[in-house]
Length: 163
Image 1 (cartoon, rainbow, N blue to C red):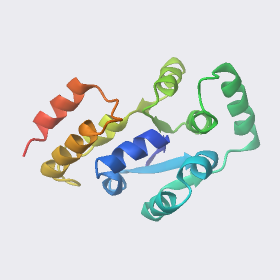
Image 2: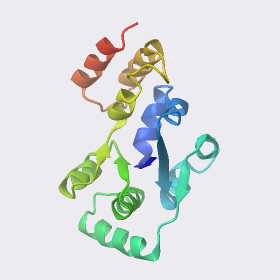
Image 3: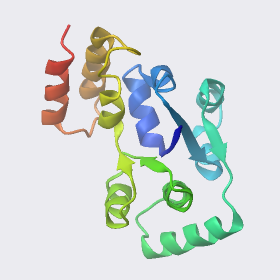
């Protein structure tokens, strides 16, 4: 089963859409680096995610050294995002991110990378989430004041998942 390393923004967007629990029904394993978990998810949300199946991964000492190098070279990346990038790259796992700088680095390094809309597309067969629920979730997400997803892409999916 493929493993996908997520940043916090994807998890937050899926929570806003009411699809976070459904994500764990998909045929993937989801992971975050321990530093990201401790700094950004620890507490009620983090505990719930671990109960749903989220893996919290420790970086090896070599991976921490690589993360330090990447962080020095890309100072706009946060340490948790750098750890997510390095663990995905070093272990050959995919990366889930909504962060523009992290996406640019993943593309430059040819790392398998996706965003929240890709996760939503994984529900398109209707076997895990009904289209009505997807439509309602996308509507909530697109109406959120902090939504940064492309409006055209959201509209296409809203039309696709219309009840």
